[in-house]
Structure formats: C-alpha cells, structure tokens
Length: 145
Image 1 (spheres, rainbow, N blue to C red):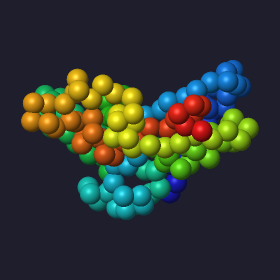
Image 2 (cartoon, rainbow, N blue to C red; image 1 turned 180 degrees about the vertical axis):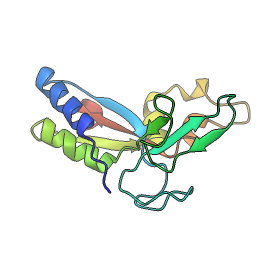
Image 3 (cartoon, rainbow, N blue to C red; image 1 turned 180 degrees about the horizontal axis):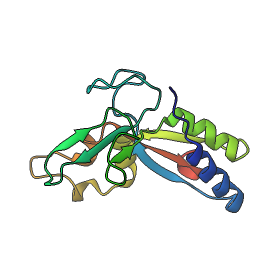
C-alpha cells in the first residue's frame, strides 16, 4: 500500500497559483516508524502509512489501531501521517513551475531562527535543539531555495 498526499499537492498548487511570489515555511513529522517497516503494534507495512490512535473514554490510555483508519471509532480517532519531505520537494517543484525548497532539521532551523537563550534550561539543555528529532522544516524563498 502507498498513501499519496493528494491534499498536499492541491494546497501547494493553489498556493503557487494565488501567490506566485510567496515564501513558504512548513513543519511536520518526518517519520513515525521506519519507512515501509512493520508497525510496532503489528500492522501491515506501507509507504507513508498513518498512525491511527484514540483515547479511552476515561483518558490516559491510548489505543493503536494498527494504521487502519477505518477501524477506529468514527470521529474519535486521530489519523496522523508523517511527511515525506523528499516527495514534498518534488510536489512543490511541480506545483511552482520548477522552484525549489530545502528541508532542514528542527535543530538546524531553530539554530538559525529561534531565541535559544530564551529556551535553554538552567542545566544547559535546550528542547528546541535536542527534542523533536523526527520533525523537519521545508522552506522556500530566501531561506530555502
């Protein structure tokens, strides 16, 4: 199975048509589990498969629906797709008539744009640089391409 980001392509196409001189910054998760690997909960391998989860009625307990977005309770399950930033770059180039963008890690983006002194703890730990390793930014324009 392959999950294709058709909504993303539509968004990029409309953005590029409506605002041809735009600059874009997008952030998302790069992965939940290794690409094409079986899900830890035993679900089937798939390219760009979603994580599907819901909370118990009392809260505090998460149920994993093994990537089956039709099995979870209707309107109550979170369906989360990671972004293939390689595919996003290709979609963007197609939608924008050949413009390019860059994918950067969260740490690299924060090094460049955040006020790190405001987010560093007394021990020197900075969650903007050390956490969120499975996230990335796609940037265009002056900062990206």
